[in-house]
Every structure is written in C-alpha cells, then in structure tokens.
Image (cartoon, rainbow, N blue to C red; front, side):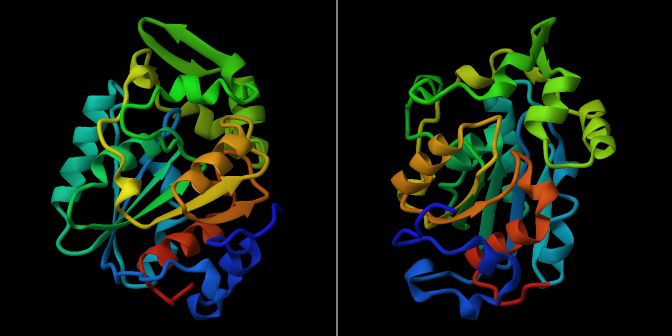
Length: 260
C-alpha cells in the first residue's frame, strides 16, 4: 500500500470498520447525509457489475439505482445517467467505475449530488484530453486486447479474463466476458465540459493490480481531486472482487455508519 496521504485511509478499515472508526484525517471535513446512491458502469460491462455492491448499500437503508448505459456515445451515456439522477428525490451519491468516471465528472454537477465516488475510474478535468493524459503513463496490457468491428469494440476473451477481471474465478470472468457491453469507437474521444470533482467532495478506490487503467494514473487523478482515497489489492473490477470494501467507501461518501 502507498503511504497514507492527508485525505486517505487504509483499505483494511474500509473493508471492515464502522465509519466512526475511520481516522479523522481520512474523512472529508463535512460529509452530507445522502439518502440515494446512483451507480454507473463503465465500458466492457453493464449495470449487473454492481450486483454484489448493491445489497450492502440497501442494508444501510439507501435507495439505490444503477444506470444501464448504451455505450453508443459519451453524450448518450451522460443522458442515461441524468435520467436516473432525475428520478432521485433528495441528496444523492453518484458513483462510477472505469470509463463512467467521465460520466460522474460530467453529470455530477447536478445540485442533488452531494458526493462523487470513483472506482478505478477516469476523472478528467473539464475539456481535458484523457487519452493524452493516459499516455504519460505506461500503457496497460488490456489495451492490446481491443477487437474492433462495425464501429464498435470489445475486449478479447483473453484480455478480459487476464487483464480486466484478473482476480475473479475464471468461470465468473468468462461469464462477464460474454455479457460485456460493446462500446462505440467514438466513446473515448469525447471530453467532459465540466469537472464536478472541483466542487463536490470525492472518494476514490485505486486498484493496485489494475491492468486496464494504470494504477499510477489512478493515484494521480485521486490526488489531483483531493479525494479521500483507498487502495485495494484488486484488478480493475474491485466492485466485483471486493464488493464490501467498495460498498463501504460509498457508504462513507453517503455519511452512513452502517457497514453490512
């Protein structure tokens, strides 16, 4: 684990301790109590990737909804996220995994969003070229496994099992490969117009063994947004391999002390 920074706390505490036990330096100065959580999935996935996280949030009496992104364009995915946010009544935590960190960054300016949670996620600044930013770090292995066809792309089975979901049982990883969301070739060329993390308190879970987004890039983005940060011994899909730890991070952002 990297040294604990001013606004980070240990993954061990997140995985098993009550919010009241977190170190004071590891919490945002003011955590607004939320009643809703909106979960957003990334590329090569669908909303079912949150299924292991959702029960922990519901056990804390939070209203939870997951966005089903079409992955046809960045604009389409932003609209899908906004449609679910529009259904929320009251303070809401917006959490995104992987590519959907861009959606959280764009849609998170909604006034009802009280906190943002990034799970091994992109977190660009407004107008920033994320691809150029990512090129400042070694290219993650999953990138070599992209297969393009008819204007869409997906990960090969080998890349998905080894580089995207490397800490899952092979049978589970292969099942997720079969239902992966195919992405438009244009998906990653878009730029955010705003950066919600500049005005909203943020939390970030770095995947230390990530082979889809470089972990050092994740650390850079988390530090830049001054996020409350944890590091997990996980692949890119920590929300599946370590759902309790991820749920606890979201509960912290929601101002909840109930950790099921």
